[in-house]
Amino acid sequence: MADTVPPGRYSGKRDIRTDAVNYAIELGAIEKTFAGHQVLKKVSLRVKQGEVCSIIGPSGAGKSTLLRCVNLLEQPDGGNMVVAGQYLAAGRSHPRRELLQLRRNVGMVFQSFNLFPHLTVLENIVLPQRRVLKLSAEEARERGAELLKRVGLAEKADAYPAKISGGQQQRVAIARALALEPKVMLFDEPTSALDPELAQEVLAVMKEVAASGMTMLVVTHEMGFARTIGDHLVVMEDGAIIEQGVPEEVMTNPSEERTRKFLSAVNR
Amino acid sequence: MIALQTNTFEFWAKYFPQLLAGLGVSLQLTALALLFGLPLGLLLALGTEAKLRAVRWLSVAVVEVGRGAPALVVLYVVYFGLPLLSWSPEAFICAVIGLTYTTAAYTSEYLRGGLKAVNPGSVEAAHALAMTSGDVLRFVVIPQGLRVAVPALMGFAIQIFQATSLAYSITVSELTANASGIASSSFRALEIFALAGLMYAAITVPTSWLTNKVEERLTLRQ
Ligand SMILES: Nc1ncnc2c1ncn2[C@@H]1O[C@H](COP(=O)(O)OP(=O)(O)OP(=O)(O)O)[C@@H](O)[C@H]1O
Ligand SMILES: [Mg+2]
Image 1: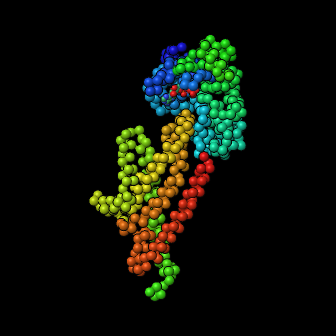
Image 2: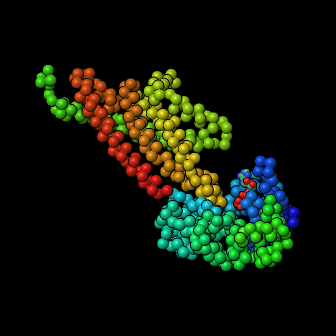
């Protein structure tokens, strides 16, 4: 699994795929080094259209870095990838148009919510629609209100982020990302900063998003979510994928000793 | 001797219109210095964080000279320097230019502090939402940074208002200049400067109070 994505399948216009295999994300031998420390060691991963892929693993394994490479918040040093049909190779700087196109297709939800603190909940969702999708104020507000209803926060539209709970902020962050109608959603430990009760509200929203057919790549410590909602489970350690497969099987019968150790540490 | 003179209130009433005209000039100087100085200060703040080293160094130099030189010296340099470049604007314009420079240099530091305080997670989220770098700056970084800097900027506005009295030294007829003129013709310096002081205070005291209120409001929202 250390191969790069074969470029042959992307003829003509380089970023339009021509074959029939429907992977929403294909990572080919992604490498990333920080100050001499190799954080990602040729990581290859495929996520099918509409699939929920969970990534677990100990702290420092490189899970966040991998996720951040997918929307190029972090520039990989090696490898290539195809994300939502767009081909991207490492080792060259990406033109702005390419970067913005990728990020329009890829939504991201962060552990620390990262709402715009100076804007109300509704304005948080309106701003990217106005600036990125170029929607009218009216249309953006209408869609924003609908999305808030979808995540159960219609009544918080005019509140500032600091005035609502962490669970509510994270649901707003999900709504904000969904507003751009992404083809892929990345979640980096979306519930780690939350009390269990608040985490449940967020997980319920994520479950609904998954049910709507969204392709999701989720770094999480929520084994319940990975098991019941996830279609695929990836275990990372020390910059590499050490095991992957059907969540239930990996969890109950891991083939790697290191996976077993990690799972028993988490389940304790 | 006092008995021969009109009493203080009559004296004040007589010269109040003249001082009021001076106060008007002081307020105009303040408004123009802020109007031109704040955007320049923002540019300098962004410049000191720029990727290009030349831009960074130039910005830092402009800021350090502006903060290092006393506002009075800046006024003199403008007033006596511009004619050497064969442009001799009237004193009021020179005062606006000098005070604008001082404003830009000082406010750039407050604005830079504000920009530094911007929540980096929200900036990253904006990039992840496919916003252009320009939009991230305009809609996420600058508005947040400005909010942080507002109390300091309001405090500075009070200081630059007081510093407009320095324009007296380059012959601008602002409040202090007018008071001084009246003092030397009437020989009642203490009384006229007391009135001038009260008039300065009539502006600065409510503004300070407002600054505190704004600061409270902004802290509450965080
Ligand atoms: N910007 C950076 N500069 C330098 N080192 C970094 C940077 N980002 C991550 N690292 C390092 O890369 C390694 C992997 O980090 P990463 O955040 O991807 O791990 P993780 O699996 O997400 O861990 P956690 O569960 O703690 O979030 C760590 O050793 C970390 O210190
Ligand atoms: Mg992480």
